[in-house]
Image 1 (cartoon, helix red, strand yellow):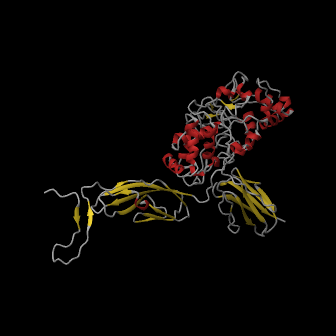
Image 2 (cartoon, rainbow, N blue to C red):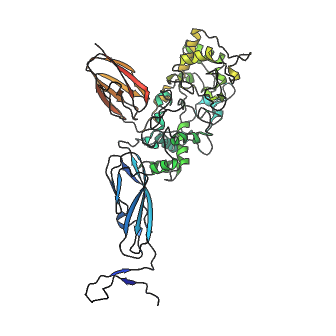
Length: 558
């Protein structure tokens, strides 16, 4: 005989007529439990207690059969300080990271439903960006290229080298999103490293370190090149070895690299989705809240392409037609340097009025190839705009001054078998320029005239997460800027208090080699102090985040 749909279970005992009874109506023919309202990713903070009800007060699962549900929770990978009881997750995250959570609901008949979600733990102390209203302008229609970039100078205009794809033009909203992404340490696995950690505005978006330092202290194999005028590279490929086919491809690689930022793109999209300010920024830039790696790449590329540097004193010499009046803008020494620059063949590789790179070359740094680059020791030629504010030069950062660079090209090019023909004399040997000391100095002075101070300080390209830090009004102050301690050495009296002012808005500290002096805490902004010993002598220190390359000394004297 067919059972009725509503079967009475747990009825009064059939034997003994003891009068005990309990009645629970279940429907075994009803569907099993199912997910009615799935959990979404949950944001948490390192060091802050978390209590999350994954059942959402009973709303997560539907139970058509009736009766109670029991719950179990399991974590995928390390629990990161979290624990589970029933349908709730509690605990205090111990480090940034993503924890997978699976909650299982089981009815009285043993049937189950499963919901999976993640808990994203962010480092404590992270801030939100401060953006102006209305936003800064970036689109070409609002900020058109200067006239001398559009004019044909020497046979071609800078605009003819523009690598902006039709599918990703620079927009105000897209570049604004890109600016936030560029400076946001949330793009790294441990919330400590951003794109700007290796590309500092004050250095033309290059790095002061010979080789940059990644999120866990690993050192990159090559120097971080400047980003100004990156859009004016006609070949459209990026990195020193041109391994990225486009700027959109390039910007994603450091994020994923195990030594640089250490994030998978899926994990990054998840992190950004639970960061309060990103859904509105993505909607403004792309029309919906959807956060994808393609959109992240597009926004970052827009911001970098918006970095047009065209207001140096050299630029001011040009009229709308591209004709130059250097006497009106440059000093006599700089004018002489410009002539040396042209006579020496420098524009063969650094082309146009932006002195942009045009291809790959082996420039004879060593007699034998020590880094194959794009093959045969060839590397992409960088733009020279703002070159005088950089601290390191060449793909390996071996030179620390423009004087060294000029001396190398004058008389130091090595007879590498793969040396570019542009750097060879008619007999095939390395070309020698034969510059005088005066001409060398003039060439360095001309390169200094390519500095665009307005670009280096423009709020359009500045850190939107930066918080102003007030320098102490007394005592020795060492500023932490662009991965440098400035000044690198100071003299103070015995027992003096030294202040370290962090204006980088990224993690730094000052750790002294003498344990008796100690170290400041790691900090991202503001001031930390150290009291120096009474004993006379030189006390060296470094940043434990960036290693010995970021170091300084304090001399205790009388």
